[in-house]
Image (cartoon, rainbow, N blue to C red; front, side, top):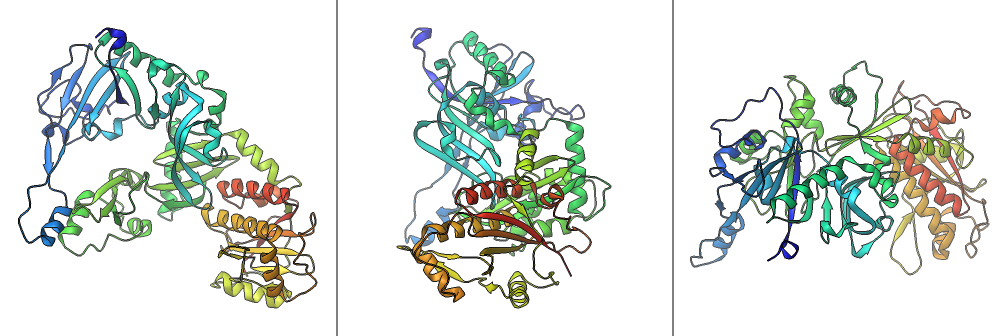
Length: 566
């Protein structure tokens, strides 16, 4: 077979970072790339084999593991006769090579399990793919979206299409992985990039392979060749400033421990979630902690730490103050106890499970998947300008102060009594030709025709849900006659027509946010619009801007107001 006819293989490639200078080389020594292996991998690999076609290269082959799946025990319980031995076998290999001073790992089978995960350069695959892909030939995008909730989703198309068709919001989406067709056919038919890069490569010619790896390194470093249709992805980009990341982590640790760290950074939202898509059909219970502790929990047969949700609060309370909490979270893991496996499965580090928003002096950062992302100044200013402009009305609400510990429902009842507004909290209207029931609003101001939606200030997801809820109800009122008919019955006021759509700016959607912290958030005056929107987490502001635009297009006025604490 000639070089031009040589078969190409779809290969996974990782770029490895430099080991810590303080890290000791594992013993016994098998080859010159031992320090790039996982801690326990040296006991799991065969003798190293030099790779002849590629200079400075070595092959590490993992010893084959054979394990019996957990479901076999259930099968034996079901059968009345013996069944054959059923075992899974995992094959894994890695070829390490050095190209222009960079260590690159070519991964075969389950070879990634042999690598020291901390040394894999994050986003190498994504950045490289973005710089060689055709922006109009994208097949799949996996992304985080920080909106009504922190969503990790994978969207794939039946055929290649423009990246804009995948619905990833430019203002709140963080792309984790992207797959598509490269501009240069030499890279094959399909390229996929996340932390690692999957690409078609000819393996039979060392010179050609080395040159292809050099080209990929150049693509990784050169954003100038990225197509215009893919440049929006950099509006929220990972920060590389080590000192800045240390400052953000210090502020995060102080917040988690309830300490005043003296930082000017403000944590505006915090939650925890798996950093990758998991199989919810088999996923059962979650646990944050060390591997030894997770296994001991199972040995005790009690499983008290495994819960149907991620208990970040309990994890923080169990911290004994030994060393830095953030360092501990990078060592500890988020485990899932599968219904098909006996042993807990580590999904990611506890640190990578955190989702945190932080702001200071016109800068916004978000921690997702163990990385701090910076919101581009242009995006920050765009949102700030829109919400302080004339599209969103900033108002003082004619509503009573909130009294602790009233739930939102109790507050709404009291507010309706004081103001005379219609109390519609938990009252729902149906839509024509559908079973769906929509909550119209919490309070309705009949005289000024205002749909008032009330929510305590919370995380980005909670406030974004408030903004989305107001938009959905307004759209139903505008477009659905049956919805309007049931609404008129709820308020018992025949002066509202049910058979005609509302006139332009006849109705108003008002968002009322309860500030529950005593002495925490004070309400700036109406003319201080910037101070008011800064009371809201950044990604909630993104959602508020989007929803305000939608409501304005539908012909509604939109108001934002705050409710203080008594």
